[in-house]
Length: 120
Image (cartoon, helix red, strand yellow):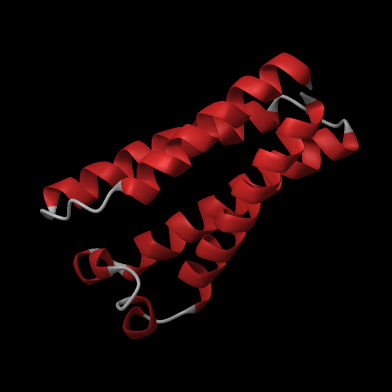
């Protein structure tokens, strides 16, 4: 199960490192083709979401690797669950029914949360 954690958490962390990093460094115009919701969201909020995603990705990997504050891994996974619930609500409120990725990320974060509390 330890291997399962590292595979799922690693993939989830890679996704959020990229997605969060993009939100932190790109302009609204560069984000718009990928994320239509940035038009109705203030850029400081978009940057904050990106920062939370990057920090959460680090929280999935670094504490279990170092053995320092390992409780941060399940906390980061739970944070991603909450984040995806919010993201799904935003999509549905905008009449955007393409929430498959959000649901997949939510389920992956739930698996990581369970694995981190069970096997780490």
